[in-house]
Length: 394
Image 1 (cartoon, rainbow, N blue to C red):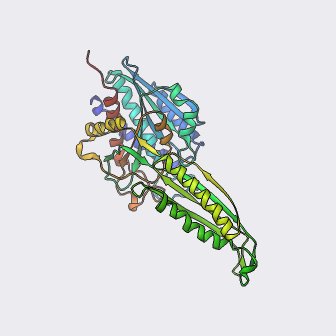
Image 2: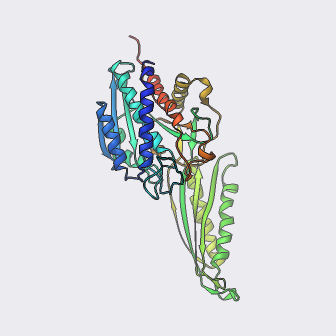
Image 3: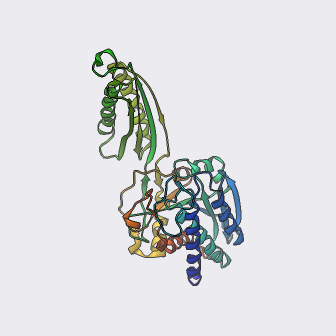
């Protein structure tokens, strides 16, 4: 590629930006400093820049040639409410906030790719439009959904949309491409059991919400084993159980909560319906009243077959066959890129981050994005543009 001579300088600037963003993390929908820096960098490159979508989102537009074809490249910008325990110079300067998922790296790499794309566009090296989507609030707040609701694809029509996430555990600089489901849908539930309190020595005088809760936990796990095809991936986990304050008192109330992870919408329906049946029967059997809620969270992220093929070809072109990872299993984690991929054919890939600092994984207080993979990420983005918006000979 023609940008090879300028790539080292771009990578160096990207590394500096990444570390600056790491030191100044911002939470969901609060990425004002990050958003301003991104917009400033894009405008300085002469890129048409749109701000304010989903509060802090930024969309850059790079055009070359005359084709009406267009693709979107998406990076997330938000940090996590976590106290960083690293001691390197670029550690978080904001107590209780940390880039523990690598969104600082994702944002910086797309800015770096934007700089190279400007050079390629001047050379008419591709034919079409690239939309650079800097999305807020991926971490549990649904910034991707908000951008879609505010007309992302109506304002910036595209044939494909692509996402990337660093992935500790994969060899540094490799890229895993999965066809079909890649990240699970994530739902949440909360259940409140109410009974009649009693002395622990005289349980017959009350209704035991703890006993009912224990029975409920076992019953809920039967949904996965008896109502979902054993060959399909799904999991339910009760992650909270709160009840009582004294050793000699049976409490009047118990609260349970947890998550359901699935790859198919019909399984979300099945879990919710089964929970309703179980709770109705349990309330009768244990003489308790039950209030509960089931909240649909991020839907499953499903990679389009055609988009995945383009991504695989881009990895081969940018990094070589040995850096393409196939055959890996999907993750039960969730990702709001799903909202984008439901509207437009998309592909979400994992960029190997290596073992990480101390072998830590995402959302660890010791995590740090691996700057050694910046060049691989930029090369992938550029190869994807060249693959998808290739010039046609006339």
